[in-house]
Length: 128
Image (cartoon, rainbow, N blue to C red; front, side, top):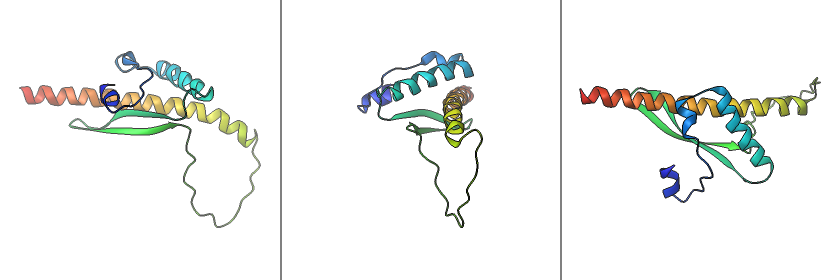
């Protein structure tokens, strides 16, 4: 929070308890709130900032665009293929994207939790 505030980012809310009593349900609630606010036009762009757990001694600060969802990078197609989707392609996408966003937020919370515990373990090891 302090890191972003000092750099003039608009921090609308913070969820300190999310990391310490981590559950998918809590992460999903936060994700639903953010998605709803984005759809209502309260935000133009949403980014997630978290510590990625690399190993016990290494955590990497990550910033990822959360909303709007970026389309995947397209590889060059050699031939156009016409698929028939059932349910429709739009129904599939509108069903999968919210679930994917919930998982993405939960992953960020898990990584941050693991990174914090790794940093604590390293600090305790160096202190002894």
